[in-house]
Image 1 (cartoon, rainbow, N blue to C red):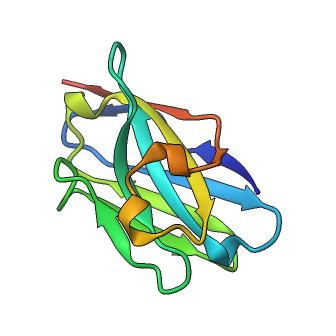
Image 2: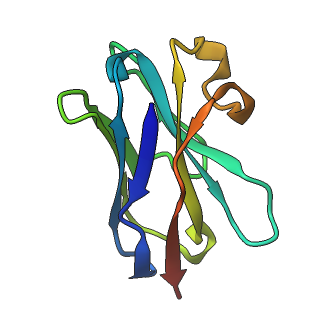
Length: 125
């Protein structure tokens, strides 16, 4: 599967942004799709994931209550709605996919074997 992330840009603190991860290829419904992010000078970190099939969602603590992940299997797209953005959310956001991923591994990037190119989100204070 090939992934393309989009929707990044410049937003003021407290604002919102919706990222999209569009997939091509077969079997999208069987993939867990996640968002990771990498801020300047920092390691890439897990943000959120949506499981294949039933669509169970996972969030890291720093985005709970602010970000919402969803998927549209007909459109082969995963969305990340980001609200109340803060300057510390500034990063390149990557989407990634893994087929039939075990629940225990949803936040571990080495288990994701397909990656999009990243989209920059900059939050100004």
